[in-house]
Image 1: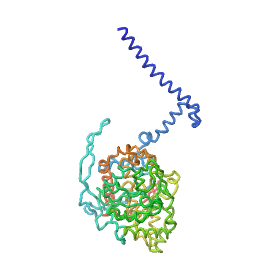
Image 2: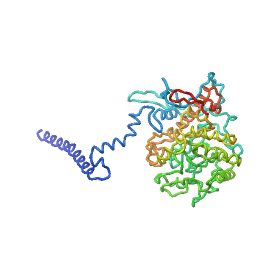
Image 3: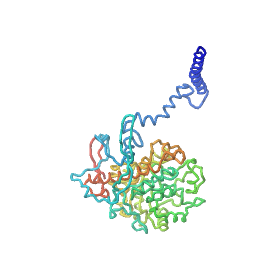
Image 4: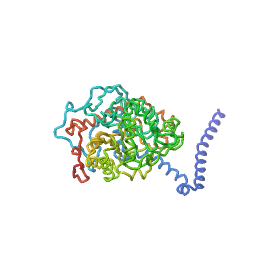
Amino acid sequence: MNWFVEGVSITTMIVISILVIVPIGIVIFLYLLDRKQKQHAILRNFPILGRMRYMLEKTGPELRQYLFNDDNDGEPFNREEYLHMVLPGKYLSSVIGFGSKRDFNESGYFIRNAMFTKQNEEMRVDNETLVDTMRYLVDDDGLFVRKEHREEVPALPWLLPEEDAVIIGPNCEHPFHVRSLLGQSGMSYGALGENAITALSKGIGMANGAWMNTGEGGLSKHHLAGGADIIAQIGSGLFGYRTEDGEFSWERLREKAEIPEVKAFEIKLAQGAKMRGGHVEGEKVTEEIAEIRNVVPFVTINSPNRFHQFSDYPTLFDFIDKIRDHTGKPVGIKLVIGGKQDAEELASFMHETGLGPDFISLDGAEGGSGATYQDLADGVGLPLRSALILLDDALRKFEVRDRVKIIASGKVTTPDRAAIVLAMGADLVQIARGFMISVGCIMAERCHTNTCPAGVATTDPKLQQGLVVEEKKFRVTNYILTMREGLFRIAAAAGLDSPTKFKREHVVYKDDRGRVFPVE
């Protein structure tokens, strides 16, 4: 017995010694290491304590997002805005209780409600063919336990009737008839992984009527997986449309044009977050992506700042005409407006020549990107609402507005924002980050590092395992359906029988002193 007690005591003493000595040894080691290093002044002057500072700095974004910011704080989207994208996709509902969390003392745009609103049966909408989707229902929402189950449900599509469809390129051999007022903005395969692209394609395809934009990375089999309508984007790097020497390939263009899902082509001049070509880190450039883009695998890609094929309006319009002639399909341009002069120069040249794009994708400076530079994202180009009015005014001034459709993008993630943008002059709306969030993005802001924890903006196979296509595709569908339903709901509140009839007169601007102004 004495031997047993003595044995336990010795064992206990050894364990205690290890628990004490080892941490002390680690602290001493780190102290000496920090004192000797020359890179960080804080660590050199305050060993150990400085490490605590860097740990808090590293975890700061997560702590602010989940603990310290309130629901209306944080950029590029606060938690309230984030939930307005997540919850409709998961639960196929955007119903809230008690009241809005918007600060009505701040300045902002508001939709004018009508004294006599429209009834549901008065709306010009096609809800004949239901969409089979899946949604979650909450069974138990306790403090420590949350139970929910998924169920199959038929949902209304909220499509425009065929006679109200927005027609892009009516004079083309193959016009693009659009019956959804919103679609997915450009996001490349490479910036996003194959699971994310596939989930988006299938979700958009199930919703019917919407479209997805390939982004400048080229068309992949993953874009075609769900049968969604495609706007094929051509960037300055010519990815998917280039020869081995980096020249434009008309043969590759014709191959894409023969694909039935490809409805239109878009020439990307710029986007809101960057007035330059795209950037993809080498570790994201898998062999499949390299083959699609006709580049070297695992080598960082930087697109040129602009196309080598044109350098002014005459050569740009000539390039547009050649693509239209080779494909028979509408051709548009994606751009950012920097001022009134830019918009009027474009519209004036369209008027003088009778040439030009079939549509203009107008991106606001608030638009996002998988990779850009802080100075470009913060300071170059106008925000969408300001730019949209300038562009719409210029096209009307030079009497070419009826020839071209405007597709607007830039943080237009909810139906009320979409309605305001449509009223300001857009014909259609396209969304990128709303769709990213619907497939699982948590705004970790690691899109450019290939370490996206949600498996969205990464080509790492291990991280992509977390994104289950058969789960996320329904969230994409539900996000689209709730957005479209919201647009019709707001139109009815404004006394309109269709969201295609929004005009500037249906929106007012209130400043922070309570004064109300029309949108002009």
